[in-house]
Image (tube, rainbow, N blue to C red; front, side, top):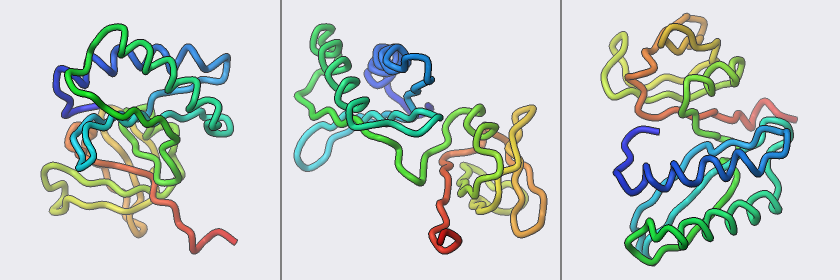
Amino acid sequence: MTGMDKTARRVLALAEPLVEALATGEGCELVDMTYHREPQGWVLRVYIDRPAGGVTIADCQGISRQIGDVLEGKDVLPNAYNLEVSSPGLNRPLKKSADFERFAGQRVRIKTRVAVEGRRNFLGQLTGCADGLVCLDVDGVSMQVPFDSISKAHIEYDFSSKK
C-alpha cells in the first residue's frame, strides 16, 4: 500500500499480523487501510477479506477488538479516532500484484499516475499479472499496464450482467 505516512505504516505493521492470525486456516487478509481526518474526527478504516466466502460480522468484530487493544496498548495514533473494520465490498480494491493474479477474469477499473499508451483510465477484463505488468483486455485489445504506474485499481462489479 503506497502513499502511507509513518504513522499509517506503523499501524499497518501492527494490524496485518493480527488479521492473518485470526484466519484459522482460511487465509484472511488485510486488503486496505486508511487513516484520515473527517468532519467528525479521525477515522482508521481497515478492510479485510477472506478468499473463501468473504468475511463475517464476527470476523470484523474480532479483528476490531484486537486491533483496538493493540493500538491502545502501543499508543500509536496521536489523535482520538474511530476504528471501522469491514469487508472491501463488491468493488474490492486491488493493491498487491498477487491481487491482479488472483482476480484474473474479473472486470477491473485501473487509473494510472502517468499515461500508458496515451491513456490513464482503463476498464476491461483482467487477464493476469507477470513481470511487473498488469495485463487486461480492453474492448478486445490486449493491453499491459506497468504495476508501478497504477495509482488506483478495483474490481468493477457489473450489475447488468447478473440475473
